[in-house]
Length: 473
Image (cartoon, rainbow, N blue to C red; front, side, top):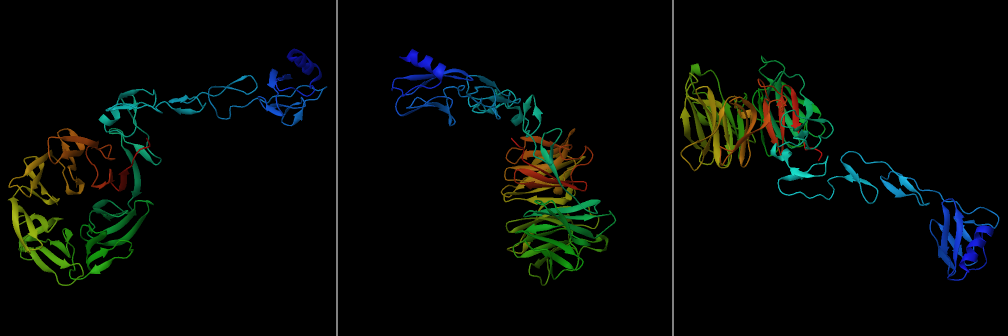
C-alpha cells in the first residue's frame, strides 16, 4: 500500500484521501521528502503539510497533479557563525569569529573567557581564554599589555600612560595661565587661582566644571590668598576683604572685617583663620594669625609674632607653621585650640618647611630638611615623637594627599621620581604608583597640584588639568 502510494504521488503529484497510517513522498528542490499524513491535518517538515484529502502543500501553494513539486527556500547566515543546516537538506558555512572569540552552540560569537572561572591571583586572558597569573594586577595596570596580558582599554577621550598603564584624560586648559598658585575641589567644580605672569601679585580665579569640562572666570586680577573649601563653599582673600562662594552660586559674597590677603587661610567652626605676613625686619608684632567670624565682623588675634603662617585644621585644632624671628630662620609648628582659644608649640627648630603642615584625625604631618633631603614625618597625637615616612626631595603640600590608611606624595627618592604611596601603619610598605610620564611631566617638572577623586586622581601639569579615569574592562 505504501509503495503504491509513493509511486502514485511521484507520477500524478496528489492522491485520494489518506489513511492515518499512510505516508506521502514528494519531490522537492532538496530531494525526495516523506511526510506522515494521518488524521485531518498533520504537520510535515520544512514547512510542508498533508491534508486529509491527500493534498501536499507549502506556503499555501497546493501541489497540482501536473505541476512540479513544492520548492524549498534555504536559510541564510544572517549574522550567525560556524556551520548550520540551511533547512533544505544542505549546510551553511557562516563567518568565523574575531580574535578572542569563539562560535558557541547557538551559532553566535562569544568571548573566549565566557564561563571561565579562574582561581585567586589569576585571570582569564581574553586572547587565549586560558587562566594565568594576573600580571596586570601585579603591575597595578588598568590598560595596555603587561607580559602578554591585555589589561583593559581606555574609554574614548583618554589615553593609556606609558609606564604605569593608567587611563588619563585631558579635562581643560586653564586660560591666561603661566603659573598655578592654588587649587581646591568643591562638588563637581575645580577652583584654580592662576597668573598670566610670575610678576602678577593678584591672581585670577577660574572654575572648571569636571562634568562638562567648561571653564569660567570668577575673578580677574583680584585673588591674593590661597583657596580653601569648607562644606562645599570656597573661600579666598582679595583687596576688598575675604570672599566666599557658596554651592550653587555664581557670584561670591564678601566677609567684612579684613581688607588684605592671607598667606594661608582655613575655616574651623564658625571662624575663618587668616595668616598675616610682611617684612619681618620691621618687627613681628603686627604679624600672625587673625580670626574672623564667617558672618563677618571684627577680626581678633589668635596668635601674634608669627610670620607667614600656613595652616591645617582638624577637629578643634588649627595647626600652623611659620617663622618666629626676623631672619626667617627659626620656625615652629603650633596647635591652636579653637575651643580654649590658646595655643602651644609642638615642634620647633630651624629646619622645618615653613609652608608644609597637614593633619588628619590621628596626627599632624610636616617636612623637615636634613642635609640635602626633605623628610616627610608624621606626629601622632598620642605620641611624644614623630615617625619618618619618606625621605627624598621635591615634597610639597600641594602634591601630598592624606587618605585614611596611606599618604601619597610626589617626590624623588633615589633615582625614582613620581607619586609614592606610603603606608601610615608601616612606612616600610611603600611603592611608586605613578611616574612623571604618567603624570604628563618629566623627571625635572611634574604636576603642581594633586587632588584625590575617589579611586582616581585630578592633577594640574603646566596649564592643563588632567584626571585618571576607569578603564573599559
